[in-house]
Image (cartoon, rainbow, N blue to C red; front, side, top):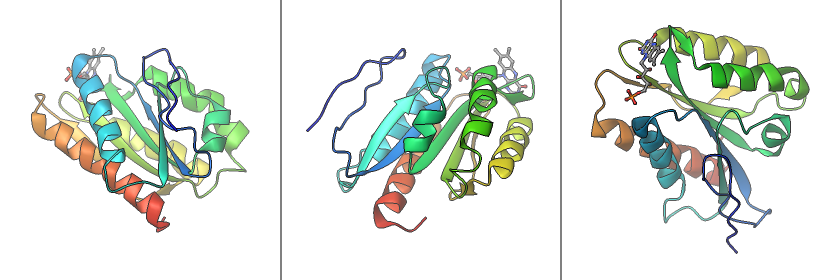
Length: 172
Ligand SMILES: Cc1cc2nc3c(=O)[nH]c(=O)nc-3n(C[C@H](O)[C@H](O)[C@H](O)COP(=O)(O)O)c2cc1C
């Protein structure tokens, strides 16, 4: 059964089958391009071959400790702003870090970054935090760097698919 729950960003929870594993996507989407990347991740995670995974997409503003507790894996998406992750994602970590630190050790995660010309500061910043959380990186970090390219969306779609497929197969 599919249900549609509005969120601040208009993305909807897509299934109410709570026996399935939950892939949580938390992405900061301040622009048309970043929304396209987030949508591509969702599209990949919803691939026709995947049936055992529920996908939930939230902005960092919407997400909090309970969302992380419920998740079996997470994809984080952020812009690089002034050499670091978006304030939105940082705020999410500020609110979530201690409440989930013990309970969610080993949580499989993947990260994609939209950067105008760099991305390494953001990668370092996120990795520092998730190392403290002891989350498990299960896909190489994806940095969509430079002028926007349609290839970025393809890469994000592949990331969503890889995470959902791995979760479904229980390989993480
Ligand atoms: C205030 C601000 C600071 C930014 N700082 C960086 C930065 O330090 N490094 C970088 O690679 N890109 C930086 N960017 C570029 C953004 O990451 C990029 O424009 C954003 O991800 C949106 O992507 P889009 O322009 O394709 O929509 C910055 C953008 C803004 C608005």
